[in-house]
Amino acid sequence: MTRSGPARRLQAAAAAAAITAGALVAAAPAAQAARPGAHCTTPMLKAGWYGDNQARLQRLLDTYGACAPYRPNRDKPVAVFDWDNTVVKNDVGDAQMFWLLRNGKIRLPAGGDWATTSRHLTPAAARALDEACGRLARPGAPLPTGAPAGAGCADEINAVYGTAATRSGAAAFAGWDHRTTEPGYAWLAQLTRGWSAREVRGFAAAARTENLTAPIGATQRVGTGSATGWVRYYEQQKDLIGALRKAGFDVWISSASPQPVVEVWAEGVGIDADHVIGIRNTTTRDGRHTAHLQGCGSVKDGADTMITYIDGKRCWINKEIFGIRGAAAEKVQTAARRQVFAAGDSDTDVSFLRDATALRLVLNRNKNELMCRAYDNSDGKWIVNPMFIEPKGRKSAPYPCATTGYVERDGAPGPVRRGDTSVIPDQQDTVYRPQY
Image 1: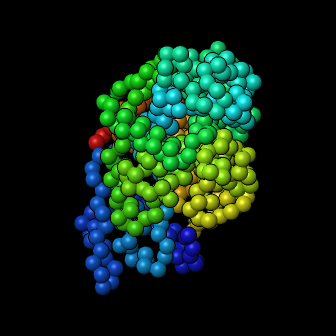
Image 2: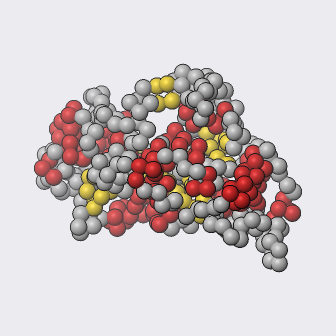
Image 3: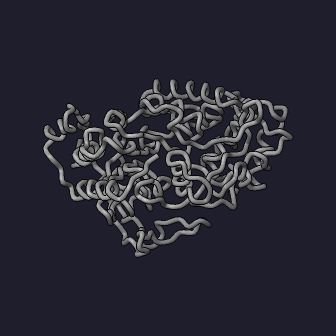
């Protein structure tokens, strides 16, 4: 993984400063930048970006790519992308849940006890799930959530997953660290209990085909309700990922969807499974998923409290990409052991985006903490782009950065602070209309 001495760090700092200052060079010379004695061509990004974002991303490629003068004796620069609504439009975790429900692939928990599916599930949610689903299958067997008899069960599972509440409005989860996990996201992975990773990848491939084939705007029947029924890759992100890889970057995906699911979808942009970091189940000796999750940092396997979510993404990136183990993986690392570039769309991506040393791409979905930091842009390394498909309109009210834009570990709202602890003032939404 990335290692360097003082000279390398000074070079990297100078390169980052050049990008931050917007020191854009003419495209043709940049594209032909060559090492002494060798011909080298930097990939050129296609059009389709807001404002000067394409130029700044191209400068990243020119500065850190294989053609950069100081590249020959150092490790590859790292780039990390979130997945859902960053590389694709819509959420592949949602798509997978809807497919599981429509195809009857969620098993009744062993012993019929829904509390065993999540340490954060409330007694009220466990009772609601038992009442809706408990008599439909033997413990351990798949529930008939795709049949009329199982529609109420499908509705209850979907409500708990999608709204964090039962159909009657009772809270479905309690007692979690809001900076390291999101119990609904984790629950999807936990509900794959009893299936192998290979089987879950098969489910993901089927869901992927359905969602890519369906027209934009399509819906599907889940239980008695209607749900989003389509997903699309963003062509601009596919092009960016391809250009980064061709330029010699080490490109990774970090997602709060289940590991086997993201592995299947990532194939569509040329990213192999060993460069995907999703929510990871522990497994039985015969390779079947349990309802427990692998840990990171100081969190042990089975504790189920450190998924790829906000600070948890930082931990998993440090662990899997940079080889940092133990509690140190939860900490911000030196610049030489951090990603050069990161891209995300949501508050779940804030920590690993802040860790990027040169450039941070944000797709605007009106998420408070993320947009507060991106618009504040205190170090000049943030760029904002509208979503490439169905971009959101302008948020009419300012982002509440100074008061409630941040979510504390216990879920309480608070002000968004910079690294020096100063409070970010409220920010206006300014990047909301596509200019492609």
